[in-house]
Amino acid sequence: MIAPPGGTSRAATGRSLLATVFRTDPSTLGTDIAAVAARIVLVWIFIYYGAGKLFGAFDGPGLHQTSLFMASTAHLHPGGLFAVVAGVIELGGALAIALGLASRLAAIALVVDQVMAMVTVTWAHGLSGSINTGYELNLALVAMALVIVGIGAGRPSLDAIISRRLGR
Image (cartoon, rainbow, N blue to C red; front, side, top):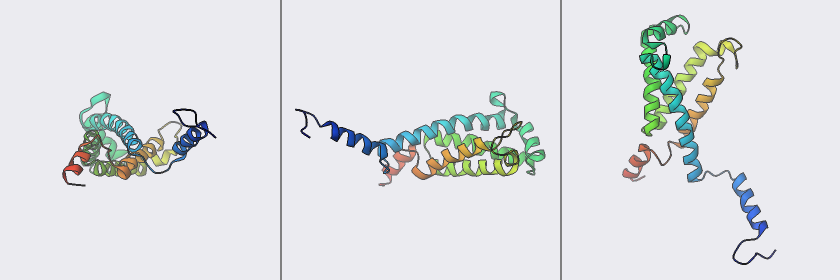
């Protein structure tokens, strides 16, 4: 097929579009977009839950109620210790991921946090509990955190700045 003057043929444009759609090697821009999207959602959710656990923010339970929940429902003793650990992991992990600072480590901590939530509380309710929440949110959060573990925080992050300064 002959290309029109000053342009490419429709067939070449179509092949290029199909190649883009089916490409499996990550582009830098595509990786950055995926990382930023996962970071935004993780930060939003974990600031909400972490600050709620620790400070009662966003109408959350606060430290005392979270301690009671950890001891009675999650069967984690001492409840106060596990309430603080969960709150710090969630809020601290969210802040680290927001800044893109030690994002992979923060994401691993959030994966462990959510696995613990599944094992101790939500697993018994199934994938989608009819009365109580099942473990579907935990699975989605684990998947998003694993994106950060796998690809990092992306170029718009402190991790990227530190990496460049270290010569990597």
